[in-house]
Image 1 (cartoon, protein in one colour):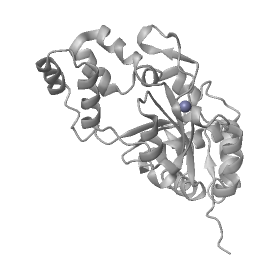
Image 2: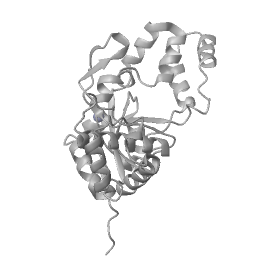
Image 3: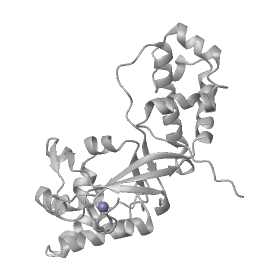
Image 4: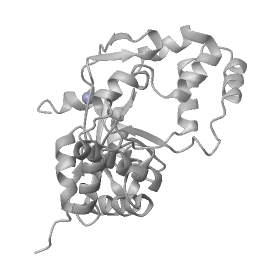
Length: 273
Ligand SMILES: [Zn+2]
């Protein structure tokens, strides 16, 4: 009999759960002495300045390593406005692909002069290595809807830039007529997440832990983790998708955008979902 690989998912929305799990992997780091030190000193437990922890340089690194060993996945959400849902389920979440987006752009604005389209493409060349091949995800689906709704309402930022260059706001508005606003739920393997992003999550967990122990809440919670993944996320990591009804529209003064598409060919084929 083969044993199943362990599967432990850090879901940022389940704050009590990830706080309670700390003892399973980090009691050798957050020892009774460290806890007592924080309890008595009652420092401000910031996440961007960890000097409130004793021996913090060693401790934070060690904590981060143990966290990354303990969890197998992070729950993460990707917002987009796909035209072809099938390709996501077949190919997974593919990083920004300029050829694909430029093709879609030319098709969408086919009645415009081709020189104008070429000029727009030239103006916004995304081939700088900082952008190509990236997939953006967030640790909380509601935060995606409330703060990053433009990805669902108008699609990729690159496509928005191209449309804006060729015809301003009215051209960008056309992006609202194609595709279906979608949130993909992903179980993101920890091994996909770059070291500095793991460190950021570790610091936020430690900050939340410290505020509890010190009984000194800082009055705000850091946002959920933002994942920038420089590789394709294969379809087996996609756990599902949905099409939210209401989305905050950051491009129109944060009014509510009502999504007219509550299903797609994929959900329609799977009515039980
Ligand atoms: Zn669907």
